[in-house]
Image (cartoon, rainbow, N blue to C red; front, top):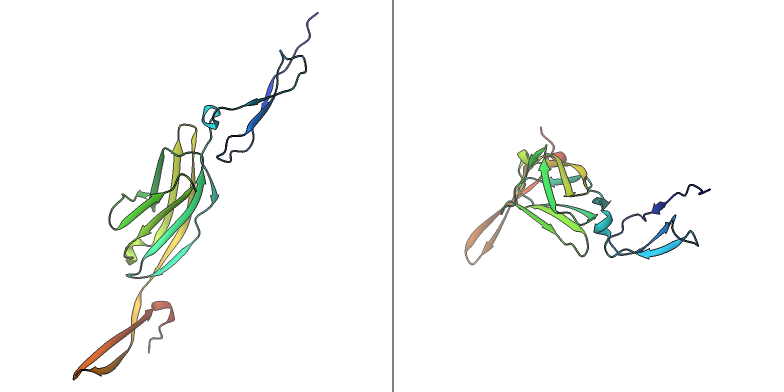
Length: 169
């Protein structure tokens, strides 16, 4: 009488590195074997974030950078603001380094309308992952004038500070 045998596969958590796989085979006499995976992609690695986005605060007209770290060989990376896709441009620079997993979005010059929920979605044929943060843009207010003379010219400098540190009379 032939007994029922069960086969199972233990897949390690994806790390982006090739690792051996342990499996139990119903056709093996020792019932336990170790095999090498030629590629994690064969098994499928869903993208995942090892470092999520964190909330960012920037003053109007400053530069703002959002950074996260992901693994899983994404085929597509999509940045969004309040659900709307942010296309790559001089204003919105997007980078991804497949060796380190570092993924960034830099807004060259921040305006109040840039405030909102910023998200990064990584997609491949095995699935997708998303991380989000809140982006706060603070305005600027006038805080003073300074004057100095250079080569018989008066030079005036205007000073500004962010709204949240301004006092209004």
